[in-house]
Image (cartoon, rainbow, N blue to C red; front, side):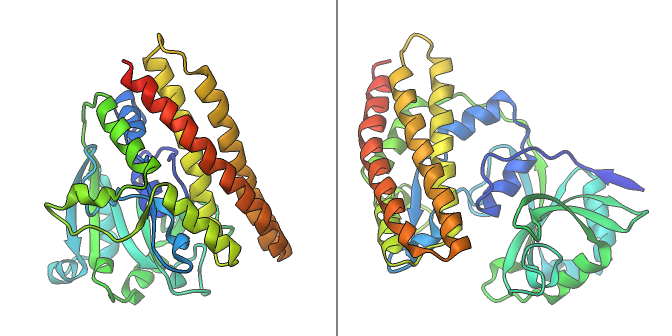
Length: 327
């Protein structure tokens, strides 16, 4: 028997906890509207090297329920109690129309870090083939490219069993199903998030009723922290990839807004932000070149481009807020 659930191209590939849920969601108008209304704020850890965790703030599926999902949470303990055959359990879950989302140590899984490094990562199982005894999973392959990978039933099961539960979160398995949801674009929310980003506000304070605030760098301050780490040659590629994805998404967001507000002229804002996105792409390429050639002299060029991005965004995004407030 063969069975697979639909997957879609995600907007973000730099961090699996973004790309895997986004691969499940149908890219209809409701989802696109919700997506461009969100994913504005950036954050990173404080201290030397903290920018290695540069990320879109929040949007963890296990902490904040995506409106487009119905999620059931299991634990490894519960699965053991049920005494279900692990492979049969996954197949039954998929046949029922639910995706199987699990955390597995990639050292034991033939993906990017196989037999190289112990790192527990998110894995999304969305299909299986009994003829080849293979699961279809989403993740990074051995060339660090995000996409579909075929993993044998045996390899997935053994990797699951070998994964140590050290911090608690590795214990959870999520059964995910799409949930139809209607969403109308909220300009008030967008301007609030843009203000948070521009003025480096602590967005975690909005969640104080359910979670203590997070002592992080936010917004443009997170880019300042990234600059410092580049200067110290203490940075990683993923952060610069996230930087580029943030600028690309912001540019696409402005295009989206210009389509739903055709009577407002966004041409100058778009023109200037496209240049900002190009700067982020240049930084990303310089980082790859620096890694490949082991040439830290390129860091000064990356810092110069980051300075330009920061100054550009202060002007462009303020202008965007003014345009939106004029509605």
